[in-house]
Length: 507
Image (cartoon, helix red, strand yellow):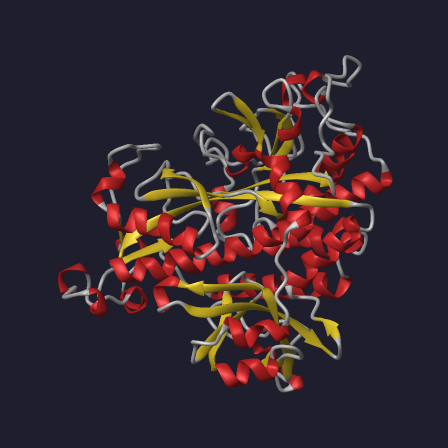
């Protein structure tokens, strides 16, 4: 689901009941059950056979901007480190996405440590092959220091939250919808000098030119166009087909509002796997783009005057038998508002937890200066604390009966942009909602449909304000997340603010 469109191919649409040949299939429940019962486990002992015909292996971790940082190593070295891990410079958590060392007190990897190695432990169950790199084996890693997870490692953070739910026989399912603008990739000297894909260099071009000089893949705006993908059909279908091969499946794939904008709705799965797939999909899209002379852009607001690029998150909880725990089999005629009539008590508590936490966890949904340029009124992005049944203008859209089957009940958190760190954002949503369940919170804010002339509380509309609330001593972020992480992430975003203030622009 985009900031401004319908929802025919949303990532959680698989949760709906489909009718095939007269037989009803509840796919969401089937996914819950299958992932509980049949998750394949890969052991160290399996690796020699798994990699028998390979010479090398690629590994990568995810930094605090959600970017893959990795290397290629020989198969022999990988087999030797697969169980206990290998040294990986902590500098990946000591600099920003441009490899500029933090100018603030980001204590997880401070300069005085000499950027000592963390231990990167391969997560063997993330194994897949990279189709566009000659099927090289690939594994994600987790970062460890002194035998404990590094607090900034989003993969370990989300696992910790999921473990807390598992202790109560619950698990989370998620789907993420990514919009992104696509640009024709210029050479260093511009669009007249592209003699082939190898000559294209967008980074060198942008050293001498403004981003406004980039050419979108197509001009104008046409959501759900049946014809526009044909103009670049090899690129368009290459992404879709390769996503299947890379175990990063797309459920819905179409053009969206804005010049050269596509939207990928990633197929619903376990929440930890979904977070991985968001980072991997960005890696895939950028890699496929290189081969086609196209640069995908996952900024929240690439072009002024156009809708931003969203990263909407669908989420639901189920028990170990696959039963949707947000669902109410029959509508509650005594519900506080009709919008909540299809939500279970747990669903209402989870929603209350998210609503209460939203102002204090905004940096995990909108992590950059640019993120907040998307969140302006009249551009299909939410700007306040709000919710409603099937309400695409609200911060949280709830999908319950009568608009879906009970087993399809879920929330769509519409605040994040495409620049989200998926592990941080999903951890925050899950931890905030679970806090609501544990505290049995009540929904304090009426749905948009019941607010009349009153105006809901606004969300922070810039990174500085968002950080103040995130970093406050009594913030919900410090209650639901590791305090060391809150301190670290605050410092990294303060660095972002400092770099922004020092920049000289046309303005």
